[in-house]
Image 1: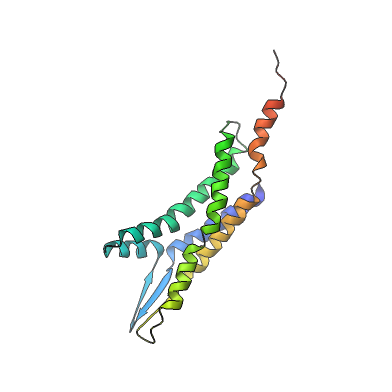
Image 2 (image 1 turned 30 degrees about the vertical axis):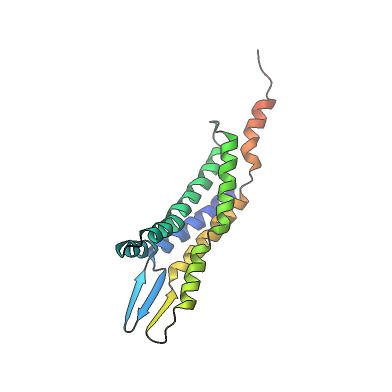
Length: 167
């Protein structure tokens, strides 16, 4: 569990600058626009692209925060005396594992935009420092989820079932 918490904490520490620093640096002629994840989504919504803005906010803010919450909940729940439904916790673990595979899609979008928008002095898009921190955050949360042993979900239930009744 120490490894789960250590990787989780490093992932959370990387997630903070991923949201504070610019994700994209857009240069048009003589101006440079720095967009964070949230400011980019707000700007897209301001221009009428509500669907894309919602996808960006869900993929880059809601899902990562949900993963942090789910991993922390699982880690705490295996130590608590309260009994949470083991099947639901296992489903939560499997969902976090599945989502982990798709979490790097944000970084791929930044890389594709950076490669495609290079208009020789007119406009260029380059990844900002947040892309690095976001990638690290995703990697560390994936490692944290992988370090969690899902068999611990069932350990308490197995011990309760094996305990003799004192009637």
